[in-house]
Length: 121
Image (spheres, rainbow, N blue to C red):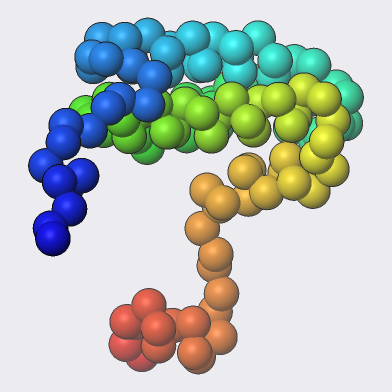
């Protein structure tokens, strides 16, 4: 007997429309934006608040082309969890700084790195 579950409509996670999901994402952005000065001071990060906010913008712009409300809701839920962990200081300084090292390109000059990147000598 075939299952009927695959033909049932999929319920949204939290938002029923793209507009509602977008509002949730913007609220998350605002919450992070307000949290950044506290995070920089509490974790004694060696970056400025401005640099942290630029990284926040960069992280949100990575997902600007996501249009599915369910996918947006999933990203917002993950972002809320990260915010809660950061706010409650459940993370260590290295966990927070990991976000800032992701955008730095690695500039190795050894043979294998050049080979993997496709450089010719």
